[in-house]
Image (cartoon, rainbow, N blue to C red):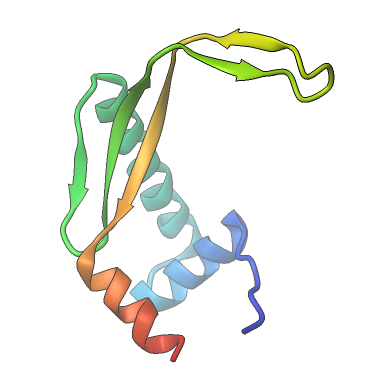
Length: 99
């Protein structure tokens, strides 16, 4: 199966067409969605969109690693990142579409 990418502009166009709104309104919605999710994650909250997925903040502990260039052992510091877990409805829809 060949995959293609959709960029922000194409996503806004698709939202505009699907929702029957102007591109400006679709862009405003997308920006608001990203802002709301970002704000909640900054506060350490989880964002659960039932059937679509869950965004959450994960804290990674420091660990030992190996420098790929020198092969020397090194310490990798702790970090904070965002994890996303796919929802059951989306997972099933994609699974059925790729059969």
